[in-house]
Amino acid sequence: MGEGADKELDRLRWHCRRGLLELDYIFEDYLDQRYAAAPEAERAQFRALLDNQDPDLQAWILHGATPPQPLAAIVTLLRGD
Image (cartoon, rainbow, N blue to C red; front, top):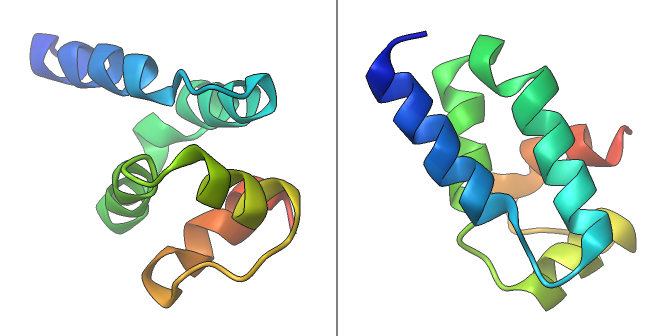
């Protein structure tokens, strides 16, 4: 990876740090295991997901609530469904 990609990953890693440890683990695992090889559309969904508030993320990812349609695919992936 180039320097720009490394900086993006560092920025995203910081943004993955949430107020809830479970979300931290889920997001960091995705970042480490899948993000670099994911299609750009999936990476864009992940970045957009991180802009949401922790209570919404917790409801969607940990408690199975239905996310807004633009985020449904990435939430499903993170849930492991």
